[in-house]
Image (spheres, rainbow, N blue to C red):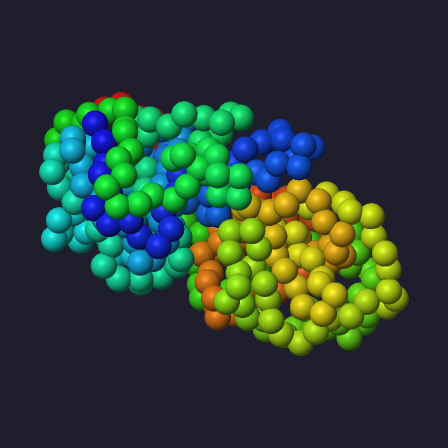
Length: 318
């Protein structure tokens, strides 16, 4: 039972929720850029929410099923089709043996996710199925997929019709020009007053040289009160660093584990999926909130997600 790549796409890799517990060794965590999408579509099919998925960029792959399967898509909308029939994100679909999944149009977002009921047959490295492109290890031979590659999956499916889907309340509010919520970073207080105003009132553009390691921003430069030398310190997915030229970089899924640039802010976790679906030339603004507010957003989402898990368990078993 497998999927065969009839077309490679620009960048399709195996990802999950990331490789945890190895930052102290300098190993970047990898994992999906939009982890909320991964969790939602895996739960939708009754998988473990950390089950491996395919992270797909546009122009996207075309995949032939050599056995029947149940799939779900989430994240970006790339105009997915099974043969000639359009299918939607955020709901299960039965795919027959010999059918082809393809993507015709970039409607919204920059990273689509494909999961399959029962999961893919992927050997884990250090407890994760995620691809580390820099080290060329993990996932599918440590690389993106090419034409004629074949990835195995674990469960043959029987014909089914589905009448359930992910609620709009759980799906991230994807936009091309969002306002992203942030909390202060360790070096926020070193910004000049004018730089704080620029950070919280101006719009910034995602630069063309952005990637899975970091999103570079272009806009009015920010400045520190004094030139400071910092010891290299821990950073994370969503850390905003101020570069020497006054521009910012937001660290993403393949980020390094430490850095010496000032950490002026951090994206709150529930807004990371919105950020992850942006691409070159998209624009963002920032809104500063308190740590307590950020925690409240996370707690509400996790509470709603738990209700979704309970509901899908009943639907998947029937």
